[in-house]
Image (tube, rainbow, N blue to C red; front, side, top):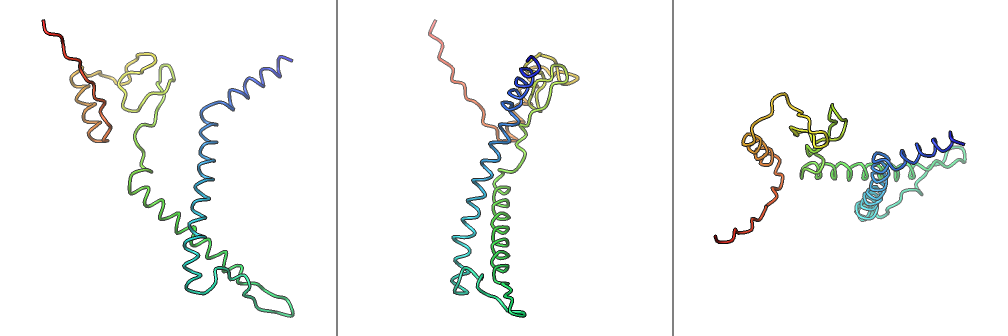
Length: 169
């Protein structure tokens, strides 16, 4: 069935595309990060609560209304877990943004309007098709100075090229 083969080819292209793989990787890292934050909230911060109140779990606290037990302690435990988890996430995000991890690094690519390939935002010429991406291309010395300024501003590591000494003539 030619229609089924085409459908399978399209699915394979979709499943192996960068967007799906990035999404899967982000999901896995998010799940691992969630486990880490939950562990910090439950195993460290909740133990401080236990040291103060004498117990980590308030689920046994209840009151009775017409022989029905209403366990408000379970709600208090879940509320405390939520507050601790939210606090830990807030602190992690603050620390990460403070050290610059959450800032946009400026390397997000954009599309070339001519060939639709991905190029870095500060590119003057498309690396795939060679088309100029700015209205007026600078002379090479100005382009080198522009690159130097960008690297200084963004603290991009400059590759060091070691020159081999020329043999004596």
